[in-house]
Length: 353
Image 1 (cartoon, rainbow, N blue to C red):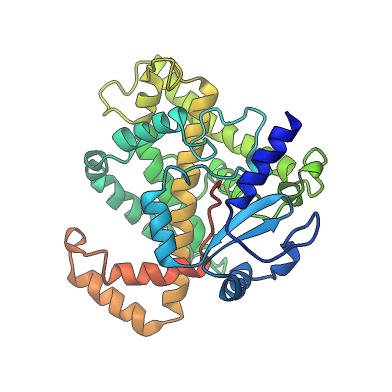
Image 2 (image 1 turned 90 degrees about the vertical axis):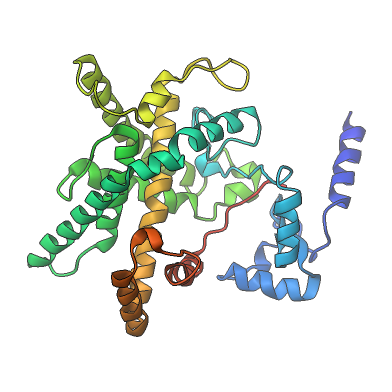
């Protein structure tokens, strides 16, 4: 069995593309500087558009060609659908209910199908147009009120977060959940931000498995602490909704995403017969985190770039005043602004090869 395992491992390694030779144990880690993307570009010029790097015991295939990337994700997307789960995101309950950490398979397909048919469906998003306008108007009012105070600088990112959070809250719970003075909002904003910050930090335990049990940087412990605190806040919103249903409130309200999760009935094969409270908590938390963090970061970066480019800002303002939202072509004008903002802070998503 040992010989067979070694032979299989040897065959797998031979199938990997060539790359720079690394050091024992640490691999190519020391060949990456403070700006890994620049190191990748430098190594790619020498070793080709597709190469293998070893970050400790973790094999990493780096693709630096748009043609190769298109071929991989267009024709081999199923093979590349799995992703490496970092130690920081491995909770005490495994991948229960998680769409982010679930590997490609029946469970992932069930969760993805539930999202695409109930959460991201066009009719539901169109029905929320009035709510989106109201949330944006509220955000502008919050910013204006904050500007009247003598507190100095305004944390625009926090107001973007409140707007995005209430948008997701209306999709899931059919109501606004936070306001600028909300203690729960400030706490969720803090804990969700810490989760994203810690999950993106390089963790030596990911590269050297022997150190996983020791968690030398404390990243896993800290991440799980903030996840649990965020779960408590999300769970509080769910409990309030359940108590409201028990009191007979909200019977005339439209069906929202929490109704979908509570009413879910599976076949016991590709998914559970019913979702546990923990699973619902995880799904709700991930919806809020994914929906608020990316929106907040993108808007904040775009605003910062526009403030540094007054001519572009005036051009965009004139365009927004002249064109109706439903007539906007996002591939041009507005899309150009977003494309300029997003790559500046692009975060790589690890895929499992």
